[in-house]
Image (cartoon, rainbow, N blue to C red; front, side):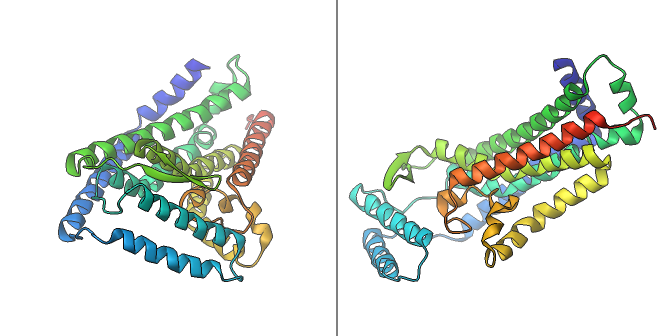
Length: 317
């Protein structure tokens, strides 16, 4: 298995397009950092000395909203969460006056995960289909190795490729963040909300968690592209469909969610797990556990279809 993965990785590494992707990612992150420096330099927001009063006023507004019986249960829980977190800040003197730092830039740089996802989908969409297009699949299947191991090695290679690109994005963003924005003067924690109470977590832990959550849609789309590539043996179809869904899937799902409760079972209703960190569920009643379960089901379906059809695939022609 290891040799198969090494062989697949060698194929990807030798492509000039792979290195173009790496350079492109680094350039775009650098430009994003430069824009952030320009933006921070052009807008100086003075510290709010009355931040405690501001939070109290905000809580008063939230409390008035809570009295609105027309609000959904999830919306009420969200408002209560904000009230509790504001009270926690006041009680523990955790100011809202924070300068833009490496943690802020890392959080903003998660917007570039879509770029890493784009490159991963391109690789995933062609890793199987290209073998059929180039006729090299026969050379793989004549070896005394099971088809399942061959396909698994290709999928593991995709996961490695995606992981490396995400690590490059995270590491390079962290490096630029430290150099350009520095560490925060006051190491305030991130305030999380669990089981009705506020807890403090380190910014590093939260940033990694947020980064992982933002990467889930890319992971699922790459798996889908891999399935389409395996089933239809067409890299253009696999890449095209996956990219189309990446850009319009959330929009269509959000529209359907306004009308149909069953839309909560759709893939893109559950890929954005950050809703459970800093927002409200797409549809009332949805929870993090529910979304994770739905994602697991979709993942198993994608992988089962890929392996079952690849096992039965006729490659004589």
